[in-house]
Length: 225
Image (cartoon, rainbow, N blue to C red; front, side, top):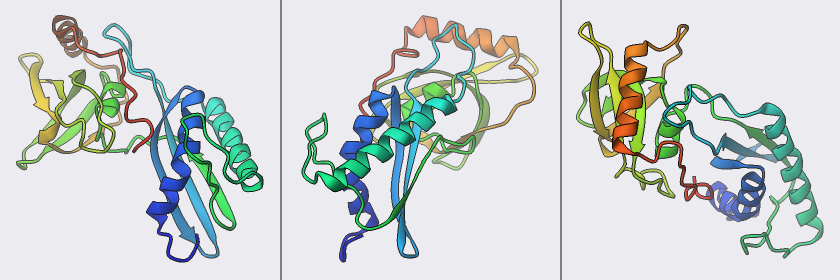
């Protein structure tokens, strides 16, 4: 980085080029970070699949790793070219700006331990079991159903959205409608057996009854993680 340039400022300079490449490949930008590593910099780009499951779909698979590798190659090419043609414009109208000095590019996908902070994360977690800590201190372990509302650009801007969760009980699933504004932390739990059919049926019925946007994704957050 240039003297006086913070990691956050370096990431903002890169963002237009990164967003163009990521979205052209059919992904959304989940996170972009620039951090110093000795005399070099590390540019870490986290991408996620844009598509979300519909009410009758199974849980979403992870992003195709070959496609992610293609994003890495294309992004590397674009940044390398920008060093030779400073001032070129991205498709969205921004100026392409490669990192100053030597850098390492890392393109990866969200891990299973990624906190669910945006409506897109919750839509991608359809039928997954999650552990939720509420802002008031209570906890809930339940299965993710439909999400109402639209995605916000920054973390927290989509907090007006509401998720329906199915909590398994001895008497059958209990549905909760939880505003994302009331979620302090939520992570997906690893499961080794299929979801109970009673919980799945209850969430599918809720999705159809609500006529929610589950499966009709809004991509407004893609460029500003």
